[in-house]
Length: 103
Image (tube, rainbow, N blue to C red; front, side):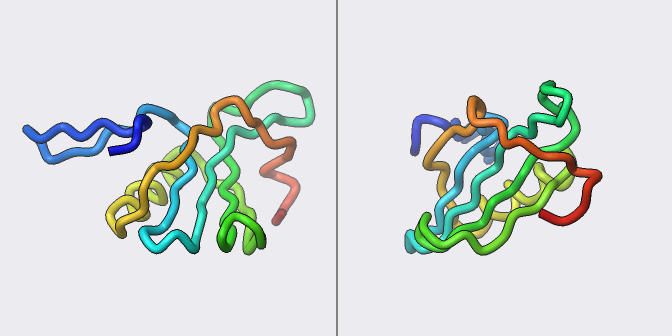
């Protein structure tokens, strides 16, 4: 199990050790990174994150903003489809404004 993940056998539950993980597909082709968002005012948003989907970590496929609930559901869905945690993006805020529109 990667260092950023804790598996609790008693409740069959995965607990992430980071709020902003990078997840990799089991075949290694897809990466999904979740990043904190630095607002135009310089503060880190407590409500929003940025999700970046890339092919083999090279070709960026999409970027979008997610709120806290959407982020939790997206992470849970990926982990249920055999993605593994490969990184921690806690200290890599992305500049943006979720209310400005699509990225």
